[in-house]
Length: 286
Ligand SMILES: [Zn+2]
Figure 1: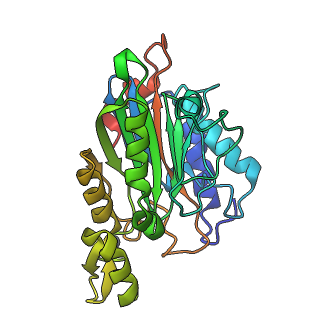
Figure 2: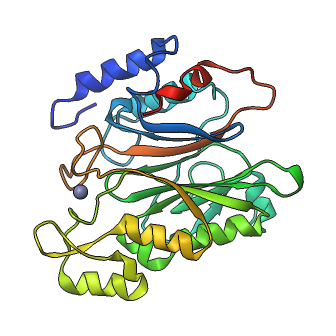
């Protein structure tokens, strides 16, 4: 780990805590938020304590892989890895596993799809961010089927091009009902300054994005924009995280362009899995 702020040792130590934890340390050192949001369905957002989880920021791929596996092992997900994606600020929604075939988009994806949203029938999904808005969505499956899960990466281009409503539409196409959304930490409208014409371009598509920063300059409130898109789509927002730029326990690209990425995660308990340490810690998610 070669973050320029010299935090390598801190991140390594925290992962070690995660790996060796008997349960009680897990949660508050690695996640900014975590909860069982439906019976057997979990949502979490990591923080800097989990280390960088992205392969595209110049970090050692082996170290990134170890961190990803450590989180999966601690959550009882060994053998059911989180699916990550190659995020490109677009509005493509990739179906994972059976959700790919069900959506008529061809064979299941091998490796990481190039997309900014993914949907699955219960397969663990991950979205990486450092200021962009990470969104996790959960819907009930039709006719007793597995819950329909989704993750979305929505920065300024994704908000403007509708990646959030595209993901909601795909979930509905898969039969999902009763959708809920969890909006993870991102740069807030008070902090996200943009040129005035850029603000107007985005606000022309999503009026809720238009804001003024704490310095009185033109800004974009991306979490408010995402919230309005979700509400327009009839999706209940159940959680909204804080500001990445203001909270140094989170990664922020605007604070440090060489920073890592934290992740929004959604997963299900494997059928027949006994309650593990992650259940013991349910009350420690914040
Ligand atoms: Zn802020």
